[in-house]
Image 1 (cartoon, rainbow, N blue to C red):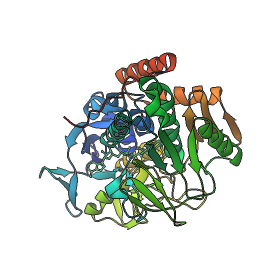
Image 2: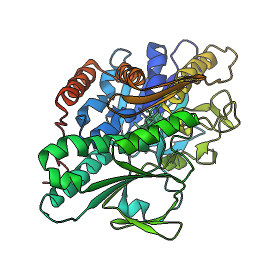
Image 3: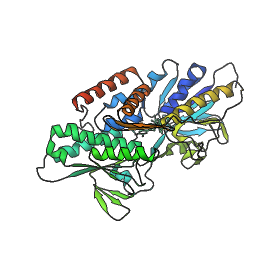
Image 4: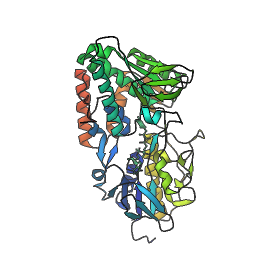
Length: 410
Ligand SMILES: Cc1cc2nc3c(=O)[nH]c(=O)nc-3n(C[C@H](O)[C@H](O)[C@H](O)COP(=O)(O)OP(=O)(O)OC[C@H]3O[C@@H](n4cnc5c(N)ncnc54)[C@H](O)[C@@H]3O)c2cc1C
């Protein structure tokens, strides 16, 4: 490759990792981002779309808009094969893109761990479409309940006590206790919300004290938290548990885990444990011109386990890989990736959140404001930020949720 022309970089996936790579490369490379959607989804706020707190378009940002400043190109589509010898990638539109470097940043998908019925009867939490489906299903069951004057009860179950499941359960409880109670109190009082976690406690990545506080806060909101409870099978309107019992569940939300995106199998690259086998340089093993970014990265952290599938890993690997590509271009030595863990946070509801940064731990109103501020900071686009602030103000001062429409059908 001649040094006089910019390296051609094709980035597969325009999420947190892919866009961080594109933006860090800026005008120093000839960048093309490929994604099946023409927008980036801000996944950390998706649960607020599901629970009517936010309009869906506030968590989506057009990829073309994000690339405008740097002159990057965009192709809507999916990769179907890679020609490793000629360094080209073929898209499902039949277009063939030539590259000097290929960055795989296709994220993750819902992992059901082989649990029967999840695919058929549970709702995932990975896309805006799924978030709108959850909102529609919850609101539809509420409308069903409004027809009954007896003691018929409906249950919404969130499976998985990690941050996504906890935030989802808390927000659902607030939706039911606030806006739905105002809409039709009898129906709202007959909705049960349950959080099922297989391990001994929710939020296992946080300290025991913060995890206990969060469970208490959820229970105060009316969520039934079931720990040490493993799901055997999800069925139509019911969940069978491994202890032989079952619980009714009109709406089951599966937030129990994610795994590397199986769509990357089409790229014929080495995959171990659902992630790309990755050198500490960010290169895919035996493929020095192919790089892994974000949830698909197979680099191990200081604890010997694969890096967590979180946004900071995606953004840090994205920026790191951009720098590595430029190093290759300028014939400079490569570096090894080191993850800087900036801590974890989760919100349980109004004025309730937990933050843990190394040994610093706090909860309550201050943690809640930290959470609000950081999410706004990382949200892309002025329009999205203004829209989100407007929705949050409205929800906060009126206790209402203006987005509780059922919009997934005619
Ligand atoms: C509901 C939810 C809440 C979360 N909350 C937090 C949080 O609070 N804090 C935190 O740090 N992390 C959170 N995460 C995790 C975080 O969002 C991910 O770790 C991060 O998005 C990973 O970035 P990525 O670039 O690898 O993947 P993504 O951001 O998921 O981007 C992948 C991109 O690839 C595209 N793509 C996928 N398959 C194809 C295909 N076949 N063809 C073309 N394009 C494709 C997708 O459309 C997407 O744009 C959350 C995740 C979820 C699902």
